[in-house]
Length: 462
Image 1 (tube, rainbow, N blue to C red):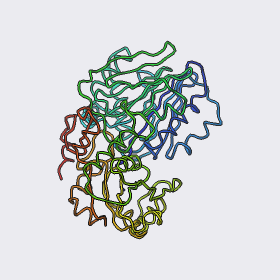
Image 2 (cartoon, rainbow, N blue to C red):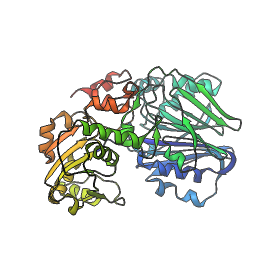
Image 3 (tube, rainbow, N blue to C red):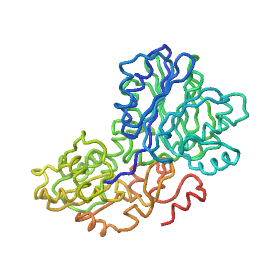
């Protein structure tokens, strides 16, 4: 199925003893590859300055040479990117690395700053020159213009001007800084390993380095790690949390913990809740791999219908690119996914996936199952209908492009070639999460936890 785009993943490491920091960054960045496949980069403090290397491509392509090299360092940060605000341009690849009146700085960001346009207009009116179209650059401009003499005071002043989603890591004077926005849109964890500290978007990036002692960096918290140890600073009060619920539905790796909960466990619960509201009878439950797997298992357990691996996924097919003809696009889907005929032939199938965006890929998948002999296909989505754009770090299309804004479920079924289509009701999502008041449901309900400026309000018009 078509998916909302991933946004980014960040890693920061500070080692008590000098070690090969670029190599140490490689493995957690590789673990976060699912959060961004367009570009990768690292910055690390070497002797008395910061070195940055970044390029378009996957972590394995861009950064593998660092495994063979030895670059002694104490501090480094890394980033994997999927373009949201600013598009996929080379100058937008992170980390951003600058020298200014506050010293030499490298910065990496996961999220979207929602008041970027108003801040940028003010800076441009004062003569600021921007080198990229990324919202992350705004932080460096504001920081360099701060009149505060103490760096942490200046950084705190800047962070209090930002709205939206920002989990960030930074190098400044051989120290690592990491922080989350006051609403905690995006996850960010802090872990202590054997002689080092690490901050990362998900716990799977900590696991790869054997880190078992970790905690969430709290919303509104700024952590500073240097030779003297770790210090925590509260730069803003966290009165209302707005964790992105799509982290659980689709983005995060199933073996990660985010927002203090197991991703796999939540996805199974979403499947169970979906089964409870579904009256359809079927012979088997299967998933669109891999993001539908856990929800399909939960559905199967709750409904008592056997779970089968009715479709295989080619993990070596690479990314799907925009192709000129429908035949080519359909062939690209077949290169990635393929039904197992002996499993689906003659069967009534519950097909579970996490979400539906445009529906074009979904049509190909349903057609493949029909061609393989499926008797009935009932598409089940473990999220509510996506009806609104996201302004906090997810690449969701415009309202007109979201298929649920143009078709009801009966029309969707006809368009996709399925017998029926059912989305997880918002009430069931609330039940599965347990504390829905701490999550952002903006893409489902059009109610956002931040006040939107006029330029963003225009995007809500259908």
